[in-house]
Amino acid sequence: MFKNIFGDKRSGGKTGFFKVEKETLIEIEEMPGNGSINACIESLGFPKNHIRTVLTFNSAQIQCLGFKTLSKQLVFVLAKNRETKISYSDVQKEISQIDWDNEYSSLNVEDILEDGVNMENLNLSFLQSVIDLKRDGDNVYKSEKLGLYLQFDNDILVAFTSSGFDDSATKWLNDLNPTLVSEMTQEAQQYHENEIDSMEEVNKQAKSILGIPHAATNEFIPLHTKLNGNVNFYNLLITHYKKQCTIDEFLFMNKGRFRTINKNTIEVGNFIYSFDSNGQLESIVAK
Image 1 (cartoon, rainbow, N blue to C red):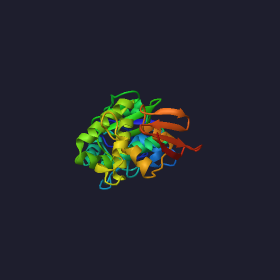
Image 2 (cartoon, rainbow, N blue to C red):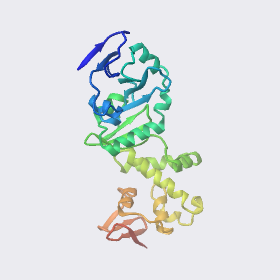
Image 3 (cartoon, one colour):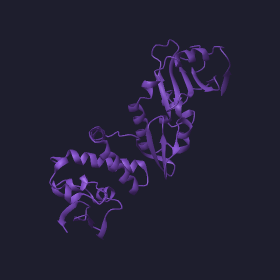
Image 4 (cartoon, helix red, strand yellow):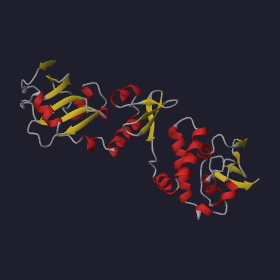
């Protein structure tokens, strides 16, 4: 089915679809499926979102190049038409003109990972083959290059978040009061098993501050100040300003810092929070 084309020897006339192995173009003799780019990708054994396709509009010979996503590892070449003759030096010329900063911009990387989460097919072994990953807790890995934490379930990517302050509210608060953010982060890390959950708590606390009138001097701050001196702004907001929440979110935001009275009634600090049968916040009473 395959014909090997070595060095700079030019080839064309069969399909114009080439598999790449060790800088060698191997022409596929029969066009797969309906001849689409997705059909080409799947014929090589990859899900379509595992390949980053770069269209080469300015090339007279090459229609597109396919790379393992998040990497520069070339997998296939598709010529403009089956009569087009190309060599590996032609391919290298096109590769040299790719704007990799644009191809793998933070927004594009986010889209790639989000697609993988939705399709449930970005596994740990594949991602380890294309990006730097260092274990950072149970089922959590960190990529220094991407500045991201990635969370896995049964070795399948299920979530990711910035390893810095990616949330706009947290960025704002960190610029205003970095000590406060640092103290919030240290507390969250004590109660959550991984950095993704820790950062989610900090982000929600920062967002809560934006919803509280006169947050720095709010009259209810003393009621929600903990023994370590930190203020639970999330609880302050839902307690005094009718901010709705679910029991799951409430338990997440107070993980390790609450007492269960019954399955729908939770005590935190100076207040008792009751949730209805649908898990929605129903009532709050002072102790």
